[in-house]
Image (cartoon, rainbow, N blue to C red; front, side, top):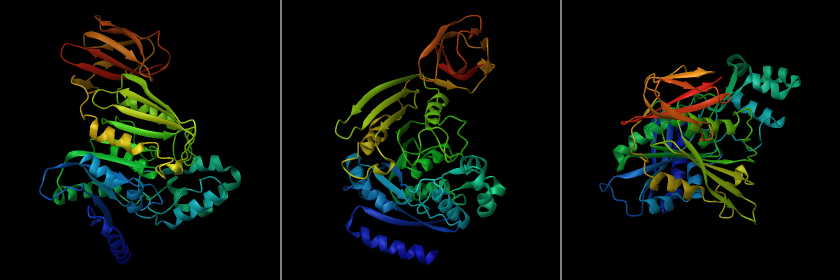
Length: 413
């Protein structure tokens, strides 16, 4: 492994030698040799001012260097006076997983575009029970014989043995000592890199101030029950052939995922702020902005674009990186001056009810639904909130006092 990595590293170093502002770095994480690439602005000099850093996670099948060229990373550095770092994922090395992927693709249970090269340990998991339901009875014996370890565990997961959260944090720690970066750290990824961006955002050791996802999904191995508590920018193709919008073996319905994130982040509004349609390519983009206090969510719903044409050429590049740059470098990290207190004390109970809720705080309140529309409001004088008029579902309760706004999530049964 060491010889292979060092040989590859040397070849890549020679390849990028013509780029004056790009550098390859090496590190070791859990006894594995890892590499990453650092791009600095044209005017960067060691020892000058601190700069923000963007961590860019490549998609499967792409090396970090190839992805850097695809995304025109040097331009991003120069436009935003920022540093961009691209860690590189490792290949899947579990023979059972590799063979299983080949078999599942042969039976059209997985898309042919899914690769086992440059794969992040992002929590991309398929449960055997779901697999057998999709495959039908004819494949059960094949699954049992070809995937004994997965059957025993109950799932198959890509690069499960790679701690890539630790790898990203190791890279960021080394960046602190080798380059001049500040605490404005932004993480973005595409495809499996987007899955890794979600995993990193939900991890306990997350250092990111903002996160961006291009055609990714929340891996089934992740615990996504908690709020992200950070600004999020998501691009999702509605007709994605690799990651179905309606869900598949690797992911639940993307619509459910994208609706639940703003709810868990206690967003209070949702507004379609931009709509774009190209009459030549028939590409349609709808931008939805969710108001979530200090943690806004921007969601771009895109139709008539393939998963594999993301950033592939000027013809199909519909401005993903431009919008990510705007979100990361131009949108203030803090977007609200109000004090926001969320679910850290029992101001509202029970959390699931059919008739009444009880609130310990006095003030004007409002209740918003999944789309951010206010469906109930009033003044809390007797500490009892009548919710009988609401339909069953999940809601956000907000109440404003002279000093703060309190928010809680509840379920109407």
